[in-house]
Image (tube, rainbow, N blue to C red; front, side):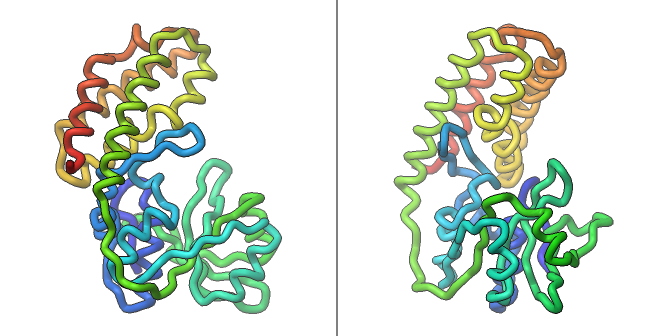
Length: 264
C-alpha cells in the first residue's frame, strides 16, 4: 500500500498503487519528481494549474513512459462507470467522499454488485484503507462525467522537457500579468472567492507544496505569507481592491524567482 506524502497527492499515490500491481515499487514523490512536477505549469480552460493539479495522462506519462507504461483515460457518463469497472482488474476514478471532497481511489475488486476501492490516503490517519460501496452508493459519489484511468504496457520513451519548461515560464509570466490586472480593480467578495483557484492556487497553494518538495523553504514561506494576506482580504467579506491589501511587489518577485528555478 502506497500513501500520500504531500498535499493533494491522492492521484499520485494512486498511480504508485497501480504500479505496485506490476511489481514497480515507487512513491507519490518518486512520480512527482520523476515527471519534474515542481517545474511544470499550464493554463487550461482559463485556469492556471501547477503541482498535483497536473494529473491527467499527458502529465503522468512523462514519468510512466520511462518505466514502460502509459496511462489510458476515458471520460464516461456516471451510469456507465460500474460496468466499466467490472471489465478492469485495476482502475482509478474520482469519488466524492463528502460534498466538497473529491478523492482519487483505485477499484481493486467487485462481486455481487459491490465494489472494493483502495483509498489513497495519508498513512497516519483514521481513514480506512479500503472503501466498500454498493452499486447505488458508487453512483451517488460520481460526477455526471467521470474520468477512469488504467495503466498499460508501452514502449519506453524519454521525455523532452525543454519545451514544457519553456511553456511553464511563459505561463508564469502570463499569470503574473493577469494577477496584476485583477488586483488593480475593485472586486466583490464573491469575485475574490471565484478567482482563488483559477488565478492564485497554482503558486499560492500547489506551488508552495512543490517548493517544499524540492527544499525551497524560503520561497515557499514567501508565498505562504502572501496567501495569508489574500485570505485575510477574502475573509473581510467586503468589496476591495486587492492591490491595497496584498504585497504585490513581493508576489511578483516571488513568481520571478520561481520561474528562475525552472531549468533552461
